[in-house]
Image 1 (cartoon, rainbow, N blue to C red):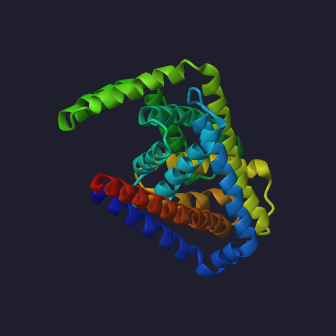
Image 2 (cartoon, rainbow, N blue to C red):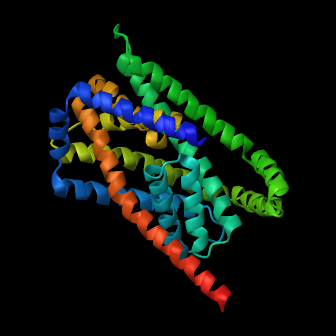
Image 3 (cartoon, one colour):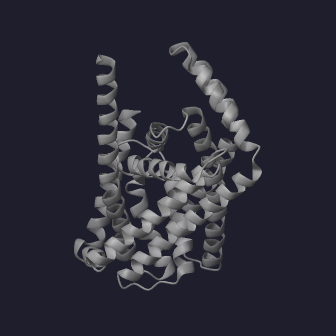
Amino acid sequence: MRLALLLSTLVGLALAALLLGQIGVAPVWAAVSAIGVGGFLIFVGYTLLVLGVLGAAWWVVVPGCTLAQLPAFIWGRATREAATDLLPFSQIGGLVVGGRTVTASGIAAPLAYAAMVADLTTEMAAQLVFTLAGVTALIARLAGDPRPHQISHAVYVGGALVLLIGGAFAVAQRPLLVLAGRLLDRMVPGSAVALSAVRQELDAIYRRHGRLLLSFALNLAAWLLSAGGAWLALRLAGQPVPLMTVLVIESLIFALRSAAFMVPGALGIQEGAYVLLAPLFGLPPETGLALSLLKRARDTAIALPVLLIWQASEGGALWRARRMAGD
């Protein structure tokens, strides 16, 4: 697994470098620098608001959730995204970090992880709706165009994979929890008991249909807001693009990123998708590549301090535990 992650990262870096070399550093840098420091800070601040919505979508499925618990779930979502974006592993590591962050705030582990599973389900369902709308718009865009479009096949495959993964996750999550419990209990006694508690909490969560619907609505709003962030970045960089156009592009980008979940940060995949998609919607490829780089710079600007704070809190908790054990 480590070798596969390393190879996929190197291939992604090589692809990103190849695209940058073909388009040229100067035009891409001009497009990136057009946003300015002030515009970039606005872009970062906007993304923090999106993280708040994502945290609320996780928090709202918790039975008996109180407003005082909301910041813990927002912070947990922030650490999850930071680990996924910056650390050299894929989505699974981010989920572990996010869950650990929430439990460190005093939320019971079975409840935190059960809520995470339910939130992932509603998030995937919301992405399916968003992706299908984008694919439909792309089909309409390419209708009657005799030119071959490489990106269309990739988007269709990405959309199909999102549908397949989302459906499989929704249907098989309970059996997978049972299987994981049995396997872990052979290696770590008591693990099956812990997963059984998660399963019980998950059953209780799924009986609250109204909460699940609200989580779905919040996650769908987060997908739309995330896409709106790309529109905002383009506006701040002096590239006024219709909002609906950006929403379609971003829905397809998100689908391709999900399909490439084994590549850390979809490195290279995201850049290639922007370069191929941008001309279909009247944007030069250097603008698409610049937008991708701006998003990575924003993710780094948020993820780095979040991970440093998280690591400091983890270290402090470990030091306090050892001190208490020594006493």
